[in-house]
Length: 206
Image (cartoon, rainbow, N blue to C red; front, side, top):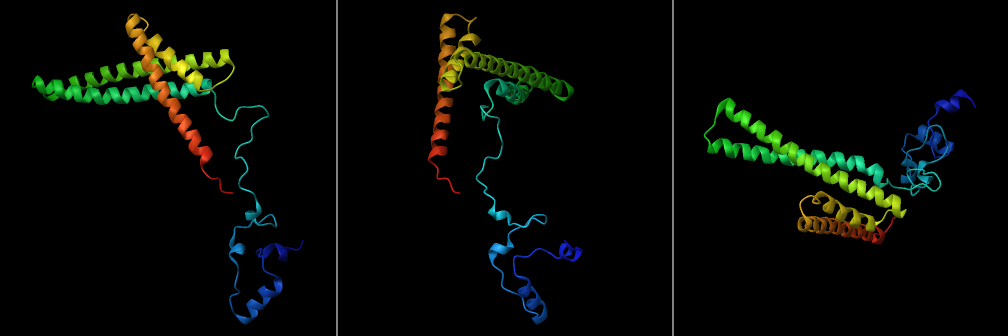
């Protein structure tokens, strides 16, 4: 392959058309197909490549989504951060409310507001983090025992989380906690089912 050929830009038009356009000073009409990006190293148009293939390559027999154990770490961390943010905002509100009621100002007021933020922020973060740990541990254990990961595990893990969290508060509150966990997990499962149906029913364009 000569150096002159490598210096010339690649074009889908014949060489005679390009030479005639250069001598007669007119712009040849090109199709929209030729305006597609072309690899400078390979003599083919990138539009010929199929774009509907999977983006990632998974080993044979591997699950195409992360399991409960892999998701547990992100769920626990996210719950702690959300709890800290919610508790911090509640601490700001209560701090301003209490300091205004006692007519506190200056450094004393600022210290009291910071104390409310730290106390309520850490308390709410601890609560949501504990719930996330109980839910993740129950889900991982159920997946290991049953050998599959489905919505039944979600319902059972949510109910177990409520039962365990209120297990020291008496039988009645324990049952109420289990019912609340079952209700929240049921709403989450209904949301997942609705999203799966909308994804499967949506038309796929090639």
